[in-house]
Amino acid sequence: MTGTADAVVERLNGALVVSCQAYPGEPMRDPRTMSQVARAAVAGGAAGIRVQGIEDIRAVADLEVPVIGLWKVGTDGVFITPTLEHARAVAAAGADVVALDGTRRSRRDGLSLAETIRRLRAESDVVVMADCGSVEDALAAEDAGADILGTTLSGYTGERPVTQGPDLELIESMVAQCSRPVMAEGRVHTPDAAAAAMRAGAFAVCVGTAITHPTTITTWFARALREEH
Image (cartoon, rainbow, N blue to C red; front, side, top):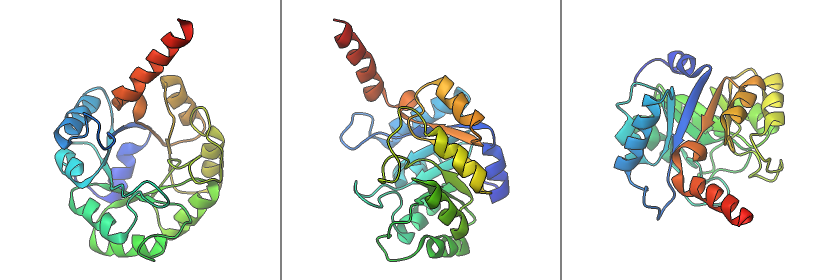
């Protein structure tokens, strides 16, 4: 999909975004498979797709919905699109939205989030999404120039507890204190939870595991049966 930054953000307003990711070593960890999952999600009503990895982004770049791209490197600290070079590669692969770590932690290349966004925008007409872990992250990311603020890292940076479902309190706080649109993401496991996130003020809701990760979904059912056996 192509379009101006404002148009991309508007297309996500009130929408369901589906995150199509598989972990390294899993059977579905293949760009063609993730592309098929993404297309199935769009057929079901997803108005946006979030994917990880350069090959996966390229595989879905022709979709007629906004593509949120990211590049995970490592597992600790800042690992979601951790440097300017990673952000450039995500944009070049065809992402309409580049998702960056939006926390206040130091980035691997020594650049601030504001400098990363400024230099990326100088080269690419992309929307920038900041994956945040707290309202303090969100305020700093907004000041840095992020277009969309996500609750993606709530519970994973030590500033907030891991909630059972989406962090509704964080969504409400970010909406109240920030002017940029807030995308709810993280532990949205049911339609009711997605609706609750929207009622909390989210402009869009991103759902991943509950739609696109059969391994985890299977464990939910298997555990429930074991507990009853």
